[in-house]
Length: 242
Ligand SMILES: *Cc1c(COP(=O)(O)O)cnc(C)c1O
Image: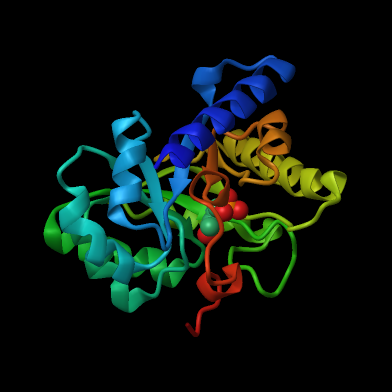
């Protein structure tokens, strides 16, 4: 488990350096640990070191880890593609924010379920900034409109925007995805939509968190750089049919 603690320190230093380079406070950027495939004992190692914000991609995994993780207070976001038939479980297994609202049908079904259970949920609008078919998210042109529609559901508390961005070693191409998300955020803020907060920008992962922070990220989602390589390719998690 030493590797996890060491890796967390390295990530923390990377975040600090990126913040100071872009004249931002360290407190403006949250580190979310992407814990797909990671076992509860390893996640608990991170919790004990004070890193208590996690993100899961699969409802099934959330259920499997639920009891073990309950022992330590933490905050859990949902960062995977959410199928409407899994909504009930997401609500009942301690998820406090769904970062991946990307279509009105999903928002509507979430709202109905939350109403029935007398609950509310933080959400973020997921935008496909890389224009790749393989990635989920509303297209950039439609993001403001979707935000407006979702804002009518009073159980859903919109906190900001999320994107996965391009996988590329070309930093400037990656940067353009993050710049685009920031631009969309500014456009939405200018619309002054009631019931909409736009403070959060969830963008940046193990390989590109510096670029994301320079472009205004408030949540970086880091998996491999903390927990090591996963056995499944990311397409396994980002493909609707799996
Ligand atoms: C797995 C995952 C991450 C973390 O990716 P790493 O490259 O392992 O840091 C971030 N965001 C989402 C949506 C993910 O599924």
